[in-house]
Amino acid sequence: MSLIFENIYKSYNSIKAVDNISFEIKKGEIVGFLGPNGAGKSTTLKMATSFIHPDKGNIYINNINVKENPSKIKKIIGYLPENNPLYYEMTVIEYLIFIAKLQDLQKNKLNSRIEYVIDVCGLEKEKNKKISELSKGYKQRVGIAHAIVHDPKILILDEPTTGLDPNQIIDIRNLIKELGKEKTIIFSSHILQEVEAIAERVIIINKGKIIADGNTANLNEEVIKEKTIKLILENDFNKDILNELRDNSFINSINYNDINKEYIIKCNDSVNARRDIFNTCKKYNFIIMELTPIDNKLEDIFINLTKNE
Image (cartoon, rainbow, N blue to C red; front, side, top):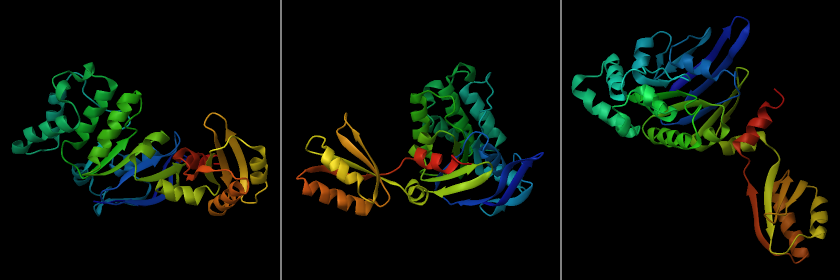
């Protein structure tokens, strides 16, 4: 089940919230939708749910036009908004039964489905508690259970880990990964580590425009031209090797970490740089313990893309 955005534009008065974006999410993908605060993430996701409509362009879910068929769309998507709307006076199980009935879940399937979502979301011990008594992490679990109770094929999660402590973040991260085995998922976040830990593909939006789309490895190649190499020698730090490497035309900078006993080398061409590093070490009879390229993290890619925007 795919999700397609075609030339989507949305403004609020004179402010462009989403500026002519197009992308497709294919069946089975887990996609992180990343951007600074105010970049257009929530607006984009709300349009996918038919909660708001674009000024221009079309959105399709499983070839169904979202704007023209909002009732159909709500049956095939699950949505967790940024501000998780819950009825605090209800118990967890009362709330989920209420939501299941709103979704017209068949009576013969209702109980088994409620049992399933309580189990998969880790709510068994909390199911008879009032939602008002739950921690923030468990409230998020209830929100996700709400989103999947009708067994949607696409999950849209807006900032699912906002306000959680580190342990709760890990729990929700693992839950999203588990759900991703069966469903297509797009989730927004401004927390780069979360996107990197969960998503197979990253879409970066800034000021309403898509500025990058791909997996981390591909974005690393496309966005960051400077490569990083880690060098560890059996011998102690030596100024001769440092000076000779700094004269190499492929190498931009070298820093020595005295704590880890490693050189961090920035270069334009990692293949030729590694060859020359090897030859230089051989010349001075230095034994190489490690000579490996280091992938830039999503944080480096994000900063590189948005620093001049």
